[in-house]
Length: 113
Image (cartoon, rainbow, N blue to C red; front, side, top):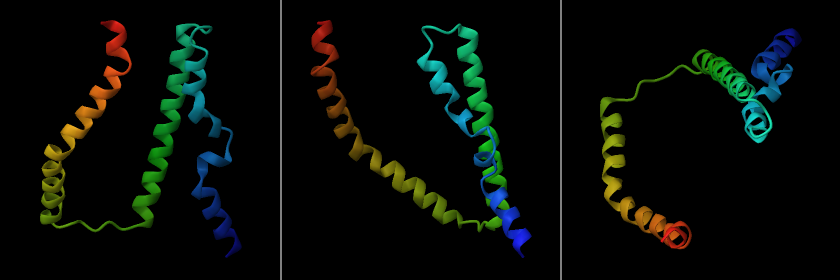
């Protein structure tokens, strides 16, 4: 029993237990030193971060597929969710547009005119 629990703990957070945990921030470090580092180093940090995030997502996706059996929603649920999402677009366009216009009018547009 104790062995199976410890295996589950190790399996639960595979990427947090090993030294690859800081690699998720590699891109931010590369961008921070962009002015000082060569372009190839910045691209390398992006590659490291991409590999880490992809491996972590793949690992968590495999765990979720094994642990939680999925139930397929009815086709009506999918269409209902899509219809609700599309029907909200006319209501959110104008507040977003006004907010962007206000921000641009109070910052960038007044400087460039």
